[in-house]
Image (cartoon, rainbow, N blue to C red):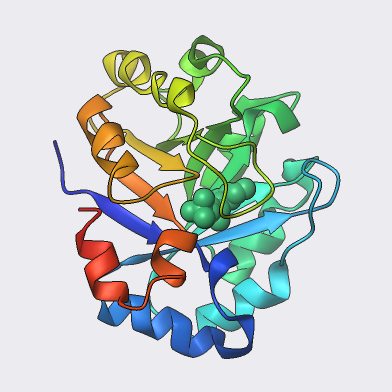
Amino acid sequence: MNKIIISPSILSADFMNLEHEIASVKEAGAQWIHIDVMDGHFVPNISIGVPVVKSIRKKTDMFLDVHLMIENPEKYVKTFAEAGADLITFHYEASEEPEKVISLIKSFGKKAGISIKPNTKSEEIFPFLNSVDLVLVMTVEPGFGGQEFMHDCAMKIPSIREKAPESLIIQVDGGINNITSKICKSLGANSLVAGSYIYKSNNYKKAIESLI
Ligand code: DX5
Ligand code: ZN
């Protein structure tokens, strides 16, 4: 298995000190930053959008992992790509034509990810495993940080790993901590998103190291 990629979710960071919060996790060993975009329709919460991604891009060279929890993702791919996203992950459930969204993301030279909510079966995304760079398996209902890890959802990982090309990144998001990270890694995940576990800890370095 490749190296584990840790992607701290800034949803749990202190937004008044975002520059410092991002620099701190970089200093602590993270190479990616997970940016949760919520529209109040696809999920029952509103978070941040394009201007924030643009501002982050100006201040860091970290890999920007943008998780779109929005309806009609195809309408916004261009603006997020131009804002400086490196990876754009959209939800399978939010798109009528996932293959088109994947091609659109790639047309901007960005990495493409597809995500599934807890009630979506892994088989549904099998047709896209050769087109995407990453599959994001949600282990909570998307919308909020700080929720409890759903073990059943992690059980989707082996079947995806079995069908996927070797280069596919399988990322898990929701309820990741020092214990659930081990479960996900043993099942075949190689990228972990963690929000509250890292940003609510008093030592980002120790928290990140405990996930690897
Ligand atoms: C939830 C978001 C997550 C969230 C994870 O909808 O997609 O990225 O920040 O938060 P934790 O790690 O606290 O479960
Ligand atoms: Zn996320």
